Image (cartoon, rainbow, N blue to C red; front, top):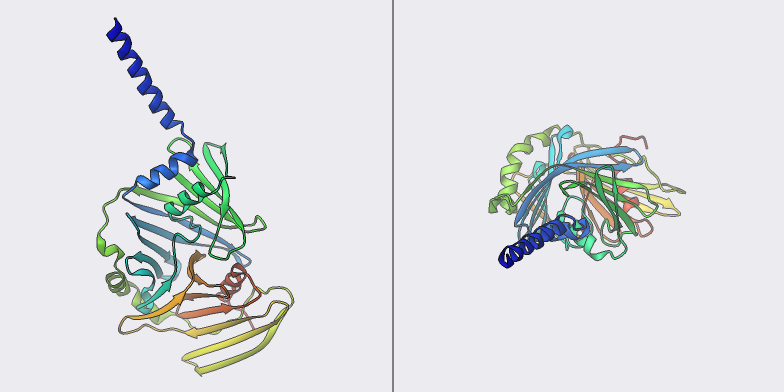
Length: 331
């Protein structure tokens, strides 16, 4: 009888441990789960709200332990792709349609909050002692602080999980005024997926993907445009164009309370792969990768390279101006 009683205690104790594991708060269980993964593939749609409207793109993230990342940004409507790679050689932004690589001096992705990188979300949860966890409509929600990029103004995010599976469903990121900036909605997730090392090799990736997208560059319509979004009390002050109608570069200066400068350059497919060097945070918004430094933002779109620079505007404001250049406007 004593043996039977002891065995019953052991079984009951074991059941209680399993139950505790299942009932563990998601703010504890999610970081533990992510830390235990050897690899994963995460896919979803990123929606970004700009003054011109909401834009979307497809994002696929690959992770290989301990520190290999590949983030693909697909723009199906524009037949273009951009890729961020993190490997032992550093951080790379690949533009296959130009056969070009930008080497970025950056602590990405550990320097800020990235809704499409699970380690970033887990780290944010662990660091915020004031996070709030709640339940709503069969979901678990964690509200906590966010950092969209280095030197960004304080912001917040909501990380939303399925209550039954505790898998990530959605991440919402808000600016300092509580306005929704981005939503990342998960469409596919695979844990401990076997990944080839070549997936994280910048040279091999550029060669293989450029073959698919290099023909698209011949169809890009390159033109100098002007922003449709303006900070208050600013106006066009000056413009200097150099080059020819087939290879143009323009420097556009705006003056006023918050002066800024826009540089637009035609970019073309390189016959041989080329590399340029940048410094800053790497941020995905709307349909593009932005490299964000203290006083400027750089991005590429459809055969054009853009820089917005200012000592007076926040990086988010500069990105809004940059995005509005993609909406055709009159001078």
